[in-house]
Length: 265
DNA sequence: ACCTACCTGGCC
DNA sequence: GGCCAGGTAGGT
Image (cartoon, rainbow, N blue to C red):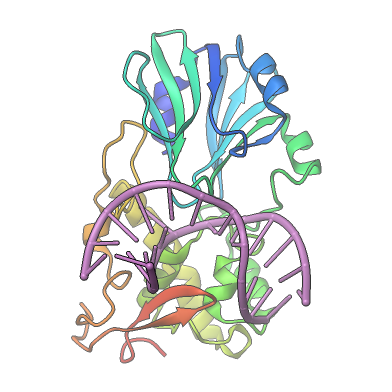
């Protein structure tokens, strides 16, 4: 999404802004948001964990988090907005940057990054799994410091940033580790396997343009293809694609979790 | 470390 | 009508 958005909006200037539901904008208040954003040019688009950052020429970032059902869209300004559109930012090329989110679990932020961090609107995030910082040592430190399940630890964005329910189950399957395994009882070999599996799963999902199981769409409102390639997520009760054993499913750390009782220990 | 609330929509 | 859903945040 960051790559697509970068190609679509870097160099564009925001000419006017329309806000929808007030709760989606977490920072600042709508009056300030609507006063600051118009006239700003997008200089860069980056990602950190599940947050997308549009760096603006005034030193602020326009930030999106999709929650469960959020969509960041770029479309022609004259197209009819979807039912739950919470931001319309008209651009100087006749297109519009939009944020749409039915459940409103996502969020929009605007401000200098330091301000967003200090106000806690932008939470502290753990190591980036697709960066050079994601070393076996860093990952081991995250896992050894807790007695929680692997599922719970990896859902916590303060340890490793950017993993969610789908890709945790996929990484655990690839690594041969049960999501309900307690972190402090993992062997060094198991930690290494999980460390290796996480970037493999993420890079693969990105190359397949994301998992559009239900709501995910890219900035052009197109579905991704990775939902066709998931090995365990959503496949409870069906055969493991590696060994044929029936996949089990249960709630772990409050989330639906699927694993292979044969491949995963 | 764990649990529930926060929301809407789609499916049975 | 009830249940489920890709994620947090805040309470216990």
